[in-house]
Image 1: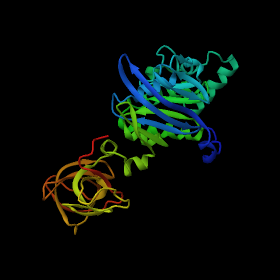
Image 2: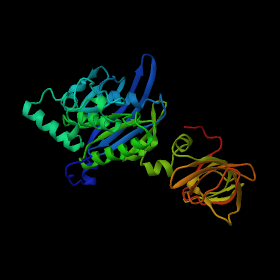
Image 3: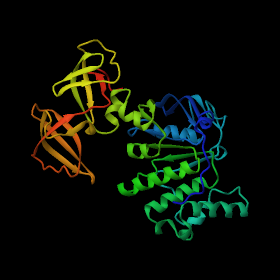
Image 4: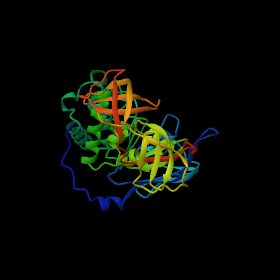
Amino acid sequence: MAAPQARPRDPASAAARPLLQIRNISCNYALERAVFDLSLTVNRGEQVCLLGPSGCGKTTVLRAIAGFHPVLTGGIFVNDQEVSAPGSMVPPEARRVGMVFQDHALFPHLSVEQNIASGLREFSTAEKREAVADMLERMGLGHHANRYPHELSGGQQQRVALARALAPKPLLLLMDEPFSSLDLELRERMGQEVADTLKENDITCVMVTHDQNDAFALGDKVGVMVEGAIVQWDTPYDLYHRPKNHFVADFIGNGVFLDGELRSASRVVTVLGDLDSEAILDWPANTPVEVLIRPDDVIHDSQGPIQARVTRRAFKGAEIMYTLRTSNNITLLALFPSHANFAIGDEVSVRLEVDHLVVFPRDATAV
């Protein structure tokens, strides 16, 4: 996917220039509340994601930004202009917002070139020709201009949908589960290609997805949603290593929770050994806790103190994900290099090496 030369970005300048501001919005479907008092800010040139399970409200937020769904409270501002407020909505076509839908929504009777041009009704003939040619080149679709959607691969259709959304030069691009119809290998490749294209062209984007791999590939920041609210707005790194609550810890990545007890402000005692925390654990001594153990916290070590049996394995190419059952009947997930090849039933020795200790009181609620 070719792209023109990127303009240099000044992160400090971009951070001072918000493009999208959502201030305390709530949205309903009939009498059912879908979004609760939600706020977020997206700066110019940022790509962010709303991530969460089905029914959490993320698509409702995207539709509200696009102008397809009203807000009951709060307001939405694009480029400092209020576009949504209770009882007031700027029409979608007047918001300068591009949209890529989950199913791409291409016109089957139009060629690639005609699909891209379909959103350029207010452009002159010369402007339309120039914009379409630019998108064909940018998305690597020049040789497919006269083909129809059914003649294209899934990845090519996704590029056409993206080209059509970007052709009118929107201020903001919105994407609703754009890779969900692609197979795993293609969605990973397309996710990275799209992320690179957006960054190289300084395009501000909000994507919603239920797939954390898609969110982490594209998002500078990711908001984890549950029951209509954002429970953590953070970098992918901190969502994985520093989840703020039990729900985020359980939803992001793989792992198991191990029972333990707080021995001091920086140490937790478990049946698999004592674990030290880099952060101060602000609970009374002897508090029952749960410790999140990620697969990368479990290290294969022939001299390791923990004996376990392989109960399941999933080959992932360079790595293999093992499910282990310890001698004291505790389940662990472990990610070993694929040359450490064990069969189901094999006995292995491991040790815990937890660089980022994630701990919650055992009676804490999920959110």
